Amino acid sequence: MFNLSGAVSGTAFTMPPQPAPTSQIPGSVQSPTLAELALPFGKIGISSFGGGLSAWVYREMVDGRRWITEDEFLGAVTMSQILPGANIVNLALQIGFRLRGGIGSVVAVLSLLVPPMIVVILLGIALTSIGHIDWLHDFLEGLAATAIGLSASVGLRSARRSLRMGWWPSLLSLGVIIGVFGLQWPIVPVIFGLAVCGLFIARVKIRG
Image (cartoon, helix red, strand yellow):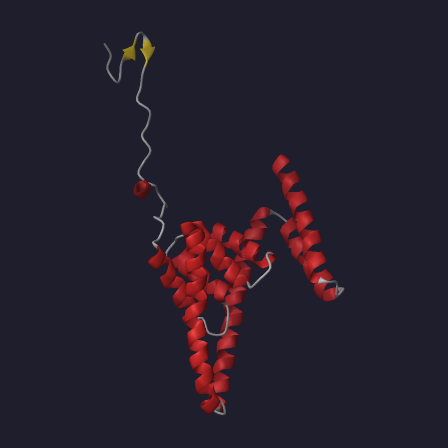
């Protein structure tokens, strides 16, 4: 005979702790449905006039809905900049895959691209008749200026994360600036070469 707090044949026996439900784990967020995933990307695509899309994605995914962490977002931004193709499309692919798998990637990208494509077609038709208005050009230039500020905010977050990792990410970034803008070297060999250096340094730090 035994009881849960006693012993079985002289051997101590205790019940293993039961894992907490996902909804009770601090900081956990249930994966969104496909419709919930499509909504913020459609909103970003339509409302982000002038660019700065990465900052809009950060606001929606990290600050607003908290579907991903800041480190996950910045890691996705880094990968989207390294991979070929448009950065924002790569970012949507990664976040969609992270949240809902392959179908999530498809939904995220289509929601990001299709609504603004329709808006651009309609605006293109309208601008043929009102494109001569001066204040309209000033308005669009102002939107572009705000996009620069939004992009800079993402850059500052990336820089802050790099500083937490040590001095070497900043040196690699400086190497890109010197190689591409200072020495006018082709961007692909510069990025590839410094990426190899970064992998080597990270491997050494992990082993150390």
